Length: 181
Length: 142
Image 1 (cartoon, rainbow over the protein chains, first blue to last red):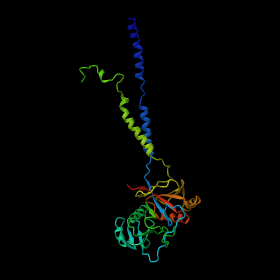
Image 2: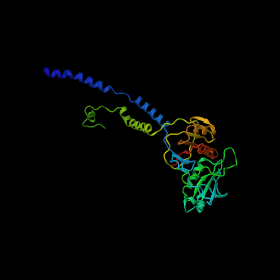
Image 3: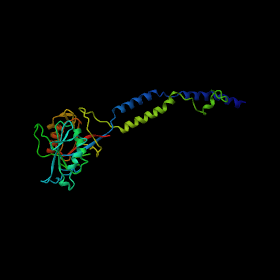
Image 4: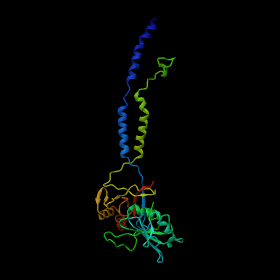
């Protein structure tokens, strides 16, 4: 009987401990607030790296060669030269004759493609107007990459000498190497 | 509708289990928010603010962009900047030349609307200064 009483006496203390444990729950609201603030901060300031390079070799060598560049073969004297003029409004001329716009000019140009040795390929001198945007020039160079039978150069305009142009192009790797992507 | 065999509802809980409260219902949302937070912290990159807004041209994905080397900014109105300082073209070329032209990898961040009448003369000046390795920064075309 005494043993049974002792058991009954212990019960209230055990219940009290269980009750205390049940009440010790942390509120999650501040944690959620803080996490949301962090999330919004990172969503706003984070940038995803979408950049890609357009490699430009301003001398006669591909970009990857970091040693002194070997010169490309000189342009042969009898090489056929074509001048591709780009106007700021997107009109493209081949030897002063309009051949279309960015979407259509390669069709006409394909008739002038060389089929033999790379050194004998016609020299295509791309001559953008000063007002041509960088985007348009890149688009034209990209379009020319699908025409392998050309050597492509960009004609430079001298700074501060409006209308006066250099006779020799300053960017002169072969097609596909000058502006590579 | 109450269970006729358990009118008090005590049988729904296992021994030692407590009634779900408001916090328990928020746990899946907190999990997702933490996953998003971790994603943005790992996948994103921070960049220093530039002197003026430059929106690079679009181009098909190419080789890897150089990790180091000076970045020359060219704005749509022809402004140039190097190392967070607005400079004229001559000053840009001089400073780059002083950094050592040989093996210097210059990254050019030109606005897509910038005139070639600004960009090409700079390339020529760089070439004249012996700087031959230039990358034009573009945005991958989707």
